[in-house]
Length: 369
Image (cartoon, rainbow, N blue to C red):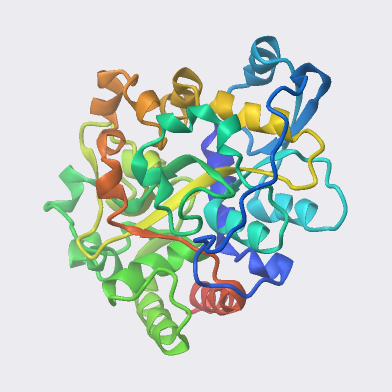
């Protein structure tokens, strides 16, 4: 998978789903009071059903649809979306989008569910849910996995050159206010949620804060930090590290090139985020049994392990993670992070109408002189 394709996925989380579907909920998706889903037919002829799956480019094996058809029966057409916003526009336009299964980030799944657009997960049709870690049911946007099934998860931190920093960074302040020798040798992300994250955490705020006073302080911190930056960089920071142009960068765990012996990744002591990409089934789908079968097929250990092996993201599938080559985990130590340690970080939820505050601040910060 191309790194650019991965950036397109992550850039999508910049804008709240509510800005697209006019949802104003900020409390997380615990599905309190959710009714039991109406039953589906477990004996349905799956070969008579056809699926359309929307996913990011390179986010699952190209031969998976053919293998699924051979193993389970339904034909699968894959459509690609570059961002969450793109697929959300299709799913919320009204009527039947024609999409049966969509891969979206967790807070977007939350917003879709709050609009009544998602089919509850029928656990009897997804027996491979047993492969997931128990912690996979504790995600902030959908506690209990009532309307979504997690596909990949991870965190954000500091990626650095040990030979160029001269010390071991352990704080977001190492990025926001770098030592003199590192000025103009650090990069941060411009994508809204990740642009805000270092300042939010260094100030002791939530990554989901909607408090205007707190966000004003975040803006002040980021404007001050800008004068020390080499660049805002969401795509090539790993290459900048390898070339020596940068010494310290903000990075998603799977993007830190720790296969290089002089490059390391650390989660800052102030804490960080938990981002999750999920699979959801649309209520408008006329092929719900096949859609559940598809999700179940993804959760088979060899199929789900592909994401960790090729995208270099952790997957919330215990059976899959146990199959990883130890050499891969040695090269990319973040793959060894336990679910318990990952969930010590803060999960993203939909921001509701407060997304406009994040957009405004991001624009003002990146435009500041």
